[in-house]
View 1: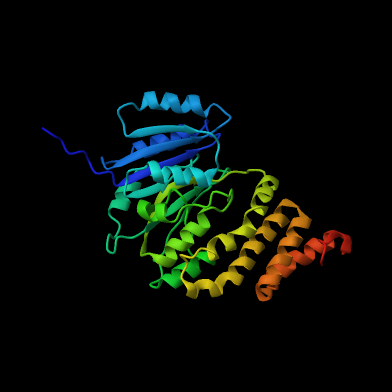
View 2 (view 1 turned 90 degrees about the vertical axis):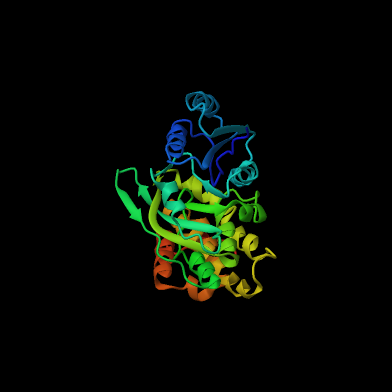
Length: 315
């Protein structure tokens, strides 16, 4: 007699790159979820630490549970997300970073989410845990009614989406693959395009605990520099983006550049900060000339004595 297997509704995909010290916590948080309609897929993206050994041990420890481990040569986070979508079997994908964890009732909350119109994204809140031990709750208010407002609110950071706290319909992700040339901010074009084209819902319940780290700001800025200013092209050159949303391109270009400007200021990289501000000014002068931004810019110039030698070429 054939026995029907439980339908896989959720695929928890955990990308792992050099997170041997914490990945087991993420795996355990996923496998501890109640129900039998989910799977856990861990993709080791060519880690240079002992992630391979830790994951093989996890495969033994959690034998008999819905866990799959995949090892691959390093390809970057975008490529891992795409491969996770291809290998997963669930209706919805939950990309859980290897250093974060699902809260105990995350999948129950997602099962209870409004199912009308087959939402492409189910966006939840999350808890952020800082190195000091301070934990903060981030709630997710209801989404605007119109897709254009959802798109615009996301670009203006009025809608915050954190991996681990969002479920994404797998067929939609497969149709809107991550740009594998991006090594930073790769989620932004995907989330924005889905919000612009599909029905999405929000639930005001935390789904994940996100661990904040005191990583090297200098390293983050260098990585971001190569991607931040490419994000507008990746998003707005996509032919799937509704034509009426093209009018927000210059605004998003400026906002991306101003984000890089602020990172440069915090990292003490004056040349990068000034270059980013110039890029923002060229795209949308009014945004670049907001008083708070000008205050940071003036302070940056004063630290260099106002010398034009501190300015990038072209200022």
